[in-house]
Image 1 (cartoon, rainbow, N blue to C red):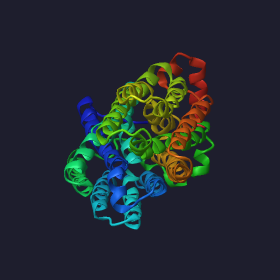
Image 2 (cartoon, rainbow, N blue to C red):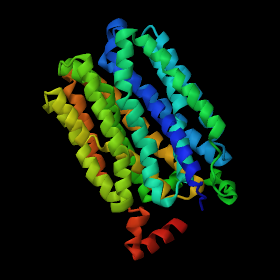
Image 3 (tube, rainbow, N blue to C red):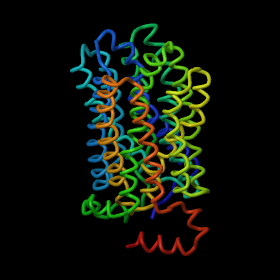
Amino acid sequence: MRRTLAPSDENRLLAILFMTVGFVFFDRLALSFLFPFMSAELKLTHAELGMASSVLSLTWALSGTLAGAWSDVHGRRKSLLVGAVLGFSFFSAASGLIGGFAGLIAFRALMGIAEGPVLPISQSLMIDSSSPARRGLNMGLLQGSSAGLLGAMIGPPVVVHIAMTYGWRQAFYLSCIPGVLIAAAIWRWVRESPRDDQAVAKPAARIRYRTLLLHRNVMLCALISCLFVTWFVVIVSFAPSFLIEAKHYTAAQMSLVMSCLGAAWVIWGFAVPALSDRIGRKPAMVIFALISACCPVTFMQVASPLALGLLMLATYTGLGCFTLFMSTIPAETVPPAAMASTLGLIMGVGELIGGFVAPTAAGFAADRYGLFVTMWIAAGGALLAGVASMFLIETAPAALARRPQVLTQFAQRSDA
C-alpha cells in the first residue's frame, strides 16, 4: 500500500526531482556536445569517445543497482540522493582538469558512480508519492521531460556557447553550480518515502534478483532496457560528431538540431506516459518504440538542418518509452518493498549492455566504417525494443479497469 502526498507537496517533490534528474543528464550529455572542441586539443578518437561513454554507463549501472537494493533494505533515500548529487556535480566540474584520455576515463568512471543512485532513488520517491491518476504523467515529467529540457534542449546551446566563448574546460567548471543548489533543496524540502511503516519494514533483503526476473514484465523490461539504452546512448554520444564531421554542419547548426532533439525529448517525455495512462502501457511502448527507430535514419537521410530539426520533433519519441519500461511498468508489477531494487536492476542491466558495450562497439565501428554505422546501430536497437514490447503484460490501471477479468487475474498474479 502507498500513501500519496497532498497535491501541493506532490508538486513540490516533482519540481525538485525534475531539476535533479534534469541536471544529471545535463552533466552526462555535456561530454558529447563538448567532444568536438576537446578532440582537437587532446587528440581523441571516436573509439575513445565511445569508451568514455561506456565507462560512465558501467559504473552508473553497478552503482545504481547496488544503491537501489541498499535503499530498499534500509529505507533511506534522502541522504543517499543528496550525496549522489554533490558527487556527480564535483566530478563533472573536475572533468575540466583532464589532460588526456586516461584522465577523461577516470573522471567519467567516478561520475557514473555518483550518478547511478539518482534515477532509481528519484523514481521510487516519486512513484510512492504519486496519486494513481497522475503516476504516468509524473514519471514522464520526472524521467523524460526533465532530462530533455535541461540535458538536451538547454544543454547544447549553453555548453557550446561557453565552449566557443571561454573554452570547453570552463564549461565543465560551471556545471557544478546547479548541482550544489539542487542538493540544498533536496536536504531542505524532500522527505523520506511516504510508504506506510509495514511496507518499509518488509524484509526486502530476502528478495533475490532471480525472483524479480521471474516476473515476465521485469524480464522483458530488462531486455528492452538493453536495446533502448543502445538507441539512446549511441545517438547522444555520436550525433554531435556525426553532424559536424559527416554532415559538415557548423557548431551552431549542430547545437540547433540537438536542441530540437531536446525539445522532442521534453514533449514526448511526458506525452507518451500520459497517453499510456489512457491507451495502456503496452500499446504506447510498441507504437512509440517503432517511431523512434526512424529517428537515427533521418540523421542519415535529411540534409537541411531545419528539416532535420523538425523531423527530430516528430520521431525522437523513445525517451517517453524510457519512463514506462524503466519505472512505471516495473513499479506496477512488483511489490512496493522491491521497487527500488527492481528499478535499479532494469537500469543497471540496460546501462551495462546498452550503455557500456554498445558505445564502445559503435566507436570502433565508426573509426573503421564511418560514422553512418552508428546511426544504423541506434535504429536497430529501437526496432528490436518495439518488437519485444509486443510481449509485455498490460499494467495501466485505466486499461485494466476496462477489462475486469484481466484486472482480477493481474491482481491474483501480483498477490502471488
